[in-house]
Image 1 (cartoon, each protein chain N blue to C red):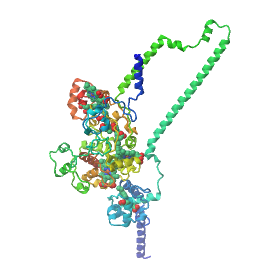
Image 2 (cartoon, chains in turn blue, green):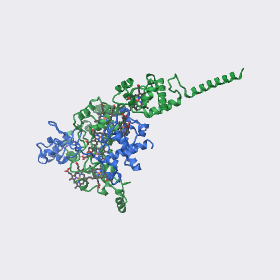
Image 3 (cartoon, chains in turn purple, red):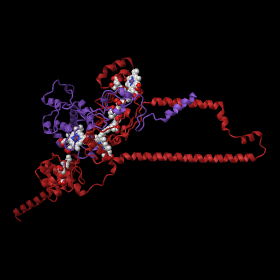
Image 4 (cartoon, rainbow over the protein chains, first blue to last red):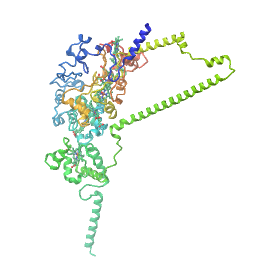
Length: 224
Length: 416
């Protein structure tokens, strides 16, 4: 009799799907352990997931993504995803001393570290911004690493504008062309930050320090 | 013959010879001032490749107009000043330039830093290429789909072949079986008709195959219930271990985004989109503005890409479905593994660059983390942070320093 009961239980278990597959996450045990009580990046938890279940006693409705405090809350639509915008009026910046090894920034460096360069200030940036980094092997290696990730798809490995995506995109500049060779570091920095012409801004992907390292590597590609 | 006349003639021949020499050096043709000699053409080709080819082709329209016959549309003087500063020419109200600009908006050709002589060389190349006509189109191997689809077809063919072979073998086997059964029957019939067989033989021939007797035997019942219990136990334990394991989860996404196309065919680095992977705990899912870096001009009309535009217009994040998810009780940090540890994405996530839809490749259980921490050497080279630790480790052990030796098995490193 016992054997039959165990057999029936086992058959029932093989019958129901346990492991994840396609749209099925897999059978979850204690699902409340997966969800953070505080607001966490990339969590996907709405009040539907709590309503009526055991979870109701552990969670406050304000801590799920469907809360009105979600930056992208809109009436009548459940937000599964949480995306936070930076606080208004703030500028993300690097720790100056850590990046440059200098105790205090000089006047033109201060502008870079404490103020966002605006989109329509290409000429100003080209004339005034100076590269705070030296072309040490470490900076060049970092620059190459970043260039390969963020610029190579369009500008190509050698910077000649012949990357695989660049061919589909069209109109990608040759970084070894004469006018860009003549351009200042500040000009290239501004192009990465805000884009120019058909190139779109890349500032959300690389922070100022990384941009300056890329500029140094572009200089190396250009052969100076 | 006077001396004066012969001097005159000499001068005349000299002039002709000089003239000939000059023309053969610079080889001006038809008086438009564009050189036709090999040296200029090849120098022009190099300049064109370096400065113009990203926007212009000779025979086909790109970001800018096709340049074939351009030297007939406009004269060299106009072309030279246009190429040097197109913006200024357009602003000056030149009707032809303004019409061109309207056609190729919003792109405006950047100023080209070339000398007059170099512009002539570029035009020489353009003219030469115009006269030669378009090259035969290269095999359309560059089209994205073609490259990606080909290997799949190969696999379909080979698996079809395999099925064919198996079916063939099965058919052959059944034929052999039927032939054997028929043979056995014929033989028994024949033996039954024979006289003079002894008792054993007749019993053997007439014996009835009795299933019931076998089923009732002690040995059979014992054996089969043992096997049954073992199978049941194995299935139960396996199933229980799979509870809470999401390996294989591959949800449909709101946009049919393909890693195989982006990271595989176009070789876009993972970091281009997963920007946090070397800097923070989270790898990050790209926001719509990152897609727009390329899709502002690639495939604007595809319905899938329209969804990105809609998301931006409605100021609404794309609702990607999360695939990998550790319980809140465990702490995992990408930058520590990718940047410091030097572990490849593929070790944990599988061959993402071959996936159309992302699938969870690893178990993501505690045992999986611990196994790797037991086996993996710490990437201590060139990292001064580890120098002292390596020294201390080497004083007591001959094995290389593993993650477990720096505390990779401590509960509190992952649970707090």
